[in-house]
Image 1: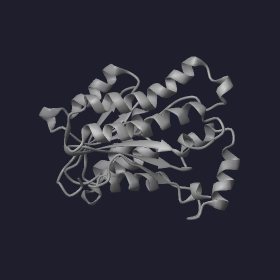
Image 2: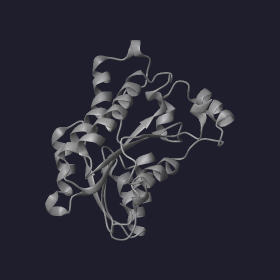
Image 3: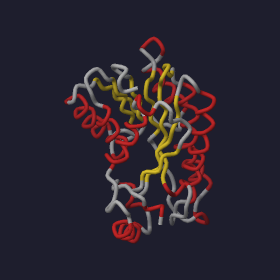
Image 4: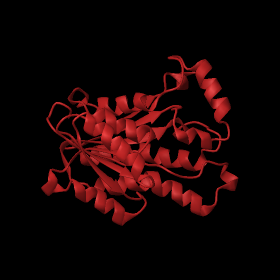
Length: 246
């Protein structure tokens, strides 16, 4: 809870995009933020520098969320003896963005193993404190058609289903919620075949206007971890500017 003093925050895939925005959003004096990355240590270090400028202590941990040993290393940083985890954000996700007929079995497995599996396994491995929050990240492709999103949509739909299961099993000590974003201006958009069409449609039709920034999603994650949201658990919060209402 944000009014409970310094927190230990673990964010997977936090070197860029939404994960980096979440790290910056939680940066405050006394907070310790674990910034997980897989490829670019330099990018992760830049995020860490920004968080440190806001008074937070940062820890950089490289690792692949598909690898159980790497997940154990992540979970071990904020072990019970190190104060445990107050906020766990499952942001990392990689995978195939292509029509289902062209997805190879290995690409399907990669997609599921980078999003759905760590949401289960890392949550189980972490020493979650009383009052902790576990937050998943999903997208509108989990519930409606998005070109080239068969594998990722299935993985994200699994995250949303697991959100409800974990919320009950971990209650009352821990709250579990997921933020489901619409189009967000990140590097991932360039991998979608229909990027231009999707951006143009969203720009024209989103009731609140425009396209979300990573910080728009980070703000919702931050809000769900506030003490004032203590009665919210097991929910998938749609943050898309109202586009899915049309």
